[in-house]
Length: 253
Image (tube, rainbow, N blue to C red; front, side, top):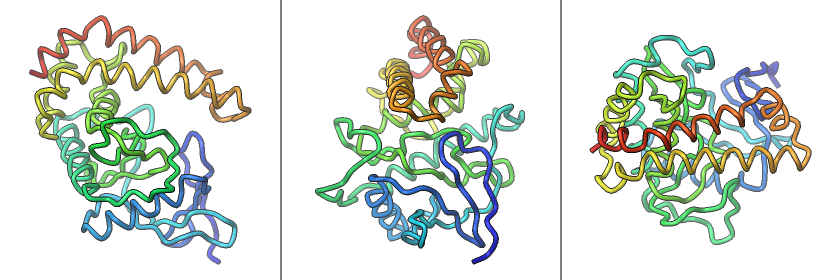
């Protein structure tokens, strides 16, 4: 087997590149994720890696998607309107490609399904889970957190990450304008625009609870996230979203 190259940037899993493939830890949710990736490939969706089963060490095998991944501190170009619009279109194309996915009756998901199950949510759409080429997002990676849910469940969290809808982000008026660019590129329905700010806050609340549950269960990665203050940052952003929900909603509608 070719040498393994550790891929940096992941905050939870140990991921390596082997030749033209990526190997990552498998979990109870892996069969459902592999079925989803096969469905996306059959639909002709090119914005996700293809699945190639499990290797001899019990790791999931995926295509290595060439391009650039970005982490903090983010380069300035990530904040362009062009990136926002491309991310919105990529997410819409992904959601549309999940239509008709025959969810296995015994499927296990990392996160529980959320009603109404309009699409298969990616679950963690963010700059760090996108592959960029020529400063544009072209593919989503790390589908471990995929689960059935409404479109807005994914869209709101992606907007939080890409705008960003954060206390230390751009001025609130600019956040609203950027959220509109993202929502317009996605083609977000009117009812979902009204729900975006509140849904983003609900997503962060769920994320904080999940972090503490995993840390209490002995997960060192999530314990490390809490130790560096990630949960406090998310709570600050929840307060920000609650305080400015009316302004953000007006900009979206």
